[in-house]
Amino acid sequence: MLSPKPSSFLIMGVLNVTPDSFSDGGAYPNAEAAMDAGLRMFELGADIVDVGGESTRPGSRPISLDEELDRTLPVVRALVSRGVAVSIDTSKPEVARRAVDAGAVMVNDVTGFRSGEMISVVASSSVCACAMHMRGEPRTMQTEPHYEDVVGEVCEFLFGRADALLAAGVESHRLWIDPGIGFGKTLTHNLQLLRSLSVLAGRGDQVMVGVSRKSFLGTLSGETRPAERVAGSIAAGLFAVTQGAKALRVHDVAQTVQARAVWSQLSL
Ligand code: HH2
Image 1 (cartoon, protein in one colour):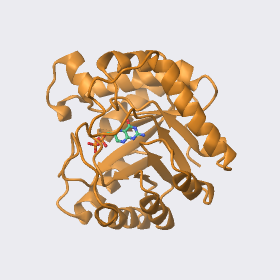
Image 2 (spheres, rainbow, N blue to C red):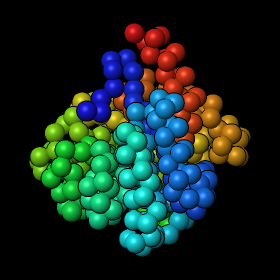
Image 3 (cartoon, rainbow, N blue to C red):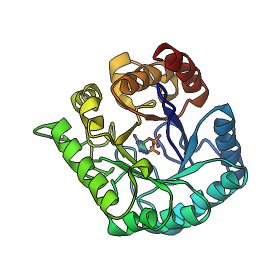
């Protein structure tokens, strides 16, 4: 079961097998190199490795089912066979189903399990679900996103998705919700959501947060290169944990593991 120890949090390592992800796109020339990187994350202390085959960066375009299967399945299979806990980052039910059949233990859907088919993949198995909030779709989501009350609207959406998953038989210990930092949100929206994370965590749902290397950190710190935003990522991630997050989705596993070792002793 995927649950953090008291006074601690889970670490999800990001493994993008895409040519165009915003920070690690094209990092792995083939499935074997991706598998090595995922294995290394697990050895360094990641609790789970999130394999994604389709970039969702602002402006990105969807890819076909076959392309996504070709990119992700060999990596999922290779990691599972080496004992790594794997999450599949997808919005396509067929990709989710095939990854779960191959041994993935979580389905991470950035569209928040809006499709009944996605819900049934998780409900008919024993794997975890992470439902994320996104306003619109990646291609257009950063075009003047507007909310009357960003915290209220994101909570309403995610609580609704969590209730739909619970009603389908997905027990609460298998369920995660994620505010989707950077997905159809301005800097102000991202900050409001992070500062009010306790509201999202207030019902007792397990909250995951992905701030790692994201562009709002560049706006705050002036660092334009995503891979150089490690310190900002850890600062924002630990802040999210103090507000109730129980898992962080990160690119820089070693540094986050070190931060967790210190943070969890201090907060005992
Ligand atoms: N962010 C990204 C992708 N998947 N899943 C969850 N649950 N939460 C997130 O914040 C989240 C996510 C975007 O980051 P990345 O995968 O690094 O980039 P890209 O979408 O360009 O592949």
